[in-house]
Length: 136
Image 1: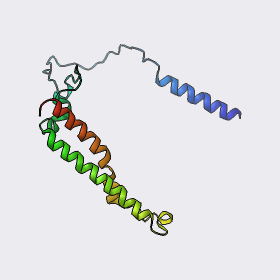
Image 2: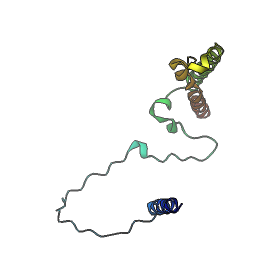
Image 3: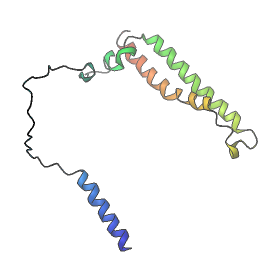
Image 4: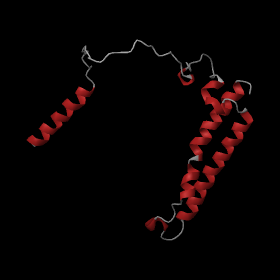
């Protein structure tokens, strides 16, 4: 029991030291620094993505989906939802086979891949809503 207490105490100290502020030290380096300064460049991804109002601007969708019309995003959303529903339905059919749960034969890679259509359908329908609100 004493070993377990020491182990728990050591873990607590290790975890708490991870959140302690680092002391600021001034380290002098014998290395000579260059007098050239690098030009300041801004990344396009570092733009401010905040907005005011009910819906965000199209630029929050990224460089590809911000140029897609709302109807196309809606169709992509329906296709993803259909793939997800079909995969779930076919997996349920395979589960009904005798011995399928014991040996795992009901798990097919293409149905697992199709099940990712649910989250993709949700994301593309939100993107479609944003584009519709922005008039695209």
